[in-house]
Amino acid sequence: MTGGQAQDGRMIGVIGAGAWGTALAQAMASDGSKALIWAREPELVAEINGARTNGLYLPGARLAETIRATGDLAELAGLPVLLVVTPAQFLASVLADLPAGPRDLVLCAKGIEAGSGRLMADVARDAAPGANLAVLSGPTFAHEVAAGLPTAVTLACAGGESQWARLAPAISRPMLRPYYSDDVTGAEIGGAVKNVLAIACGVVDGLKLGQNARAALIARGYAEMLRFGVARGAKAETLAGLCGLGDLVLTCSSTSSRNFSLGKALGEGLSAAEALAGKASVAEGAHTAPVLAELASREGIAMPIVTAVNRLLRGEASAGAVVAELLARPLRAEQGGGA
Image 1 (cartoon, rainbow, N blue to C red):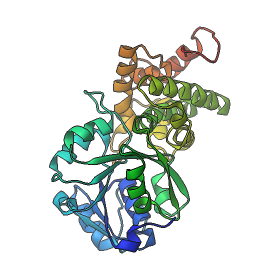
Image 2 (spheres, one colour; image 1 turned 120 degrees about the vertical axis):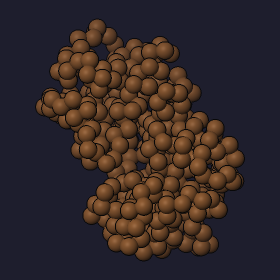
Image 3 (cartoon, rainbow, N blue to C red; image 1 turned 60 degrees about the vertical axis):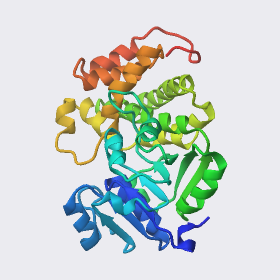
Image 4 (cartoon, rainbow, N blue to C red; image 1 turned 90 degrees about the horizontal axis):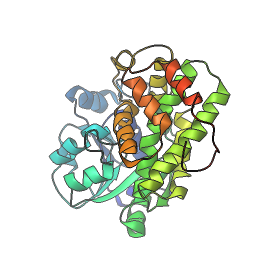
């Protein structure tokens, strides 16, 4: 399926010029369509428009000539489809600055808002009440998407199949294939929880505990994701798909994942502050872990891996100590409500 944009000449807007936002703009432009990307930094706007690069967030990528950058959100206000790729903790403030109007907002950031515990769709409903919301999530390394390598994602549409019929042709590209879901909650929870679990897998790598330990952690982490998601109204089959298990496997297996890299640094003995210092890109799991651990505790959902990552990030225990605590948990059956 090719993009409908190329056929009707419409432009897609991308809010956020980090690695993922820039990669999505590049994907949208891959068939000759136009993409307008908003960046907060004036120097980044100038670099994208002048040099056709984004050296800070996506080094090495040569951006398509049909991508244009702007520092003025109002320029995107008239576009019918906006991909919103700002970090989760800044979503509310950015959408508050976006002029109101009827449009499809496709939320592409993965996380939970600190303080409120809200998922991104809940944040967007309050900040942009007139918008039609969808969530794009799945196993996606930005540099691979920007390079045009094959990628499949979940496109969860709050507006159901009628919204999907609008959005799928606009977003689909030969190397970017969306799959339909109506489970916005499941898509969001999969994307948020996997970031925290990727930190845990990075810790295992940093401690040199081996592939067996990482595989076990992915499986037990998926059980935590499933428990939390189902308790929050997500569908189990959604979490077994691209935006849950698929994304979990990818981000728990490579230093291309910012969250995995953070965990690896923690496993090698750095503190969270040391590991995060000087990073241009956000390891969203570091923000998600405390709020996710608090929500799980408050709602009585067993998430020992998430709790362990939170303790490690807060400096309450060493990497070796939290792993030892997980291994010392009571023996029990693999299936069931516990962990």
